[in-house]
Image 1 (cartoon, rainbow, N blue to C red):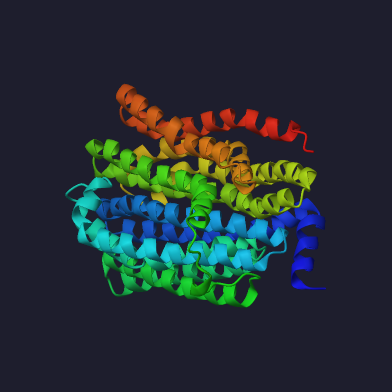
Image 2 (tube, rainbow, N blue to C red):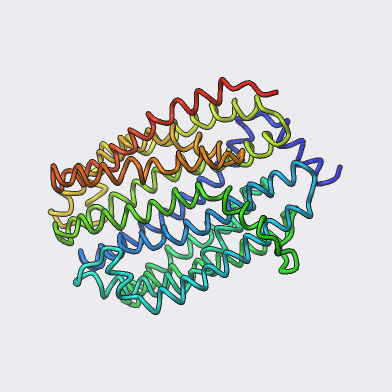
Length: 445
């Protein structure tokens, strides 16, 4: 049996729970490890003081910008690769992945150069105070230097997932994450390089992860990455960007909203920024479970929709929401109960704990509603309904969060900042319900 026929049978005949879990668990593990090393950064840097730790929150926004570009290109090209493979067209698949990959490297180089040239105003724009700025610049320079490798890694990771190779995508990201954890310990604790050590560790681990993913893609993927396959047609670039645009919105708005959050938190001092940094790290850790299972569903939805297996797409949506709810609850409930201890683990200053504990409890409640909003958003992106998916992507960090943040901060001050994201998560989940029902009731010819 040839490779394309075997893959076709796997995607259209494997029981849905088994298929989604087999694709979603490696992705979830990858994202968990990535977020674990982000929290390890927060932990080790937190031992240096409030201002250094607050710098990791500032750079969280920059990393979201990098991921926004990468996920647009990775999920845009990956969706089209999945469609092409369902049509048994390996040549077209190679064109899409090659175009997305080399475009990502180019974007990474431009962002690296511009970011390093305008490093100081860039860090201030992201919400850095004068006491945080020196640390943010050290960490930020390292993140920017590894920017091309980071974008390339996410493009490769997404395309491996859409080809059903989530396990190999996991190995690439997990290896980088583990290296970063050990690098933090060696460079921060042993060599006492402080924030600069955390930045170097992050940069080196991302570069190593990039080359591992590139190796696995060359060995395992049906499509191929070659410079000669890069398209000269504007339509190919527009298709990748249009299909991937919801991912850009999700990640891009996250960076904008985090920057706004940092700026609105700034008047309350470094302790408040440090507290919200811890909360955002833990929330991202919980959220990545929902995203991981959702991303495991994406290749299933994309492939089966193109193969006209519409009932599998519908059943897959229900399965994904159920699995996501179970997994997220297993993290959100302990996070709610032990919120004060979690904040204390990262920052032992009492003011940080006092601010972070109620914020973390609220955040844990909000993350449960991601099991409604994330799967349906990824469904519409995977079946190339870019308009609907873009609207759903606008909700969480944009249409719901930004007005909520501005209003609650104006009315309630610091407490408004603490409750704004959870409130937006709850509203986004509720608004997503009609879109779920509409798709499940839709009759296909």
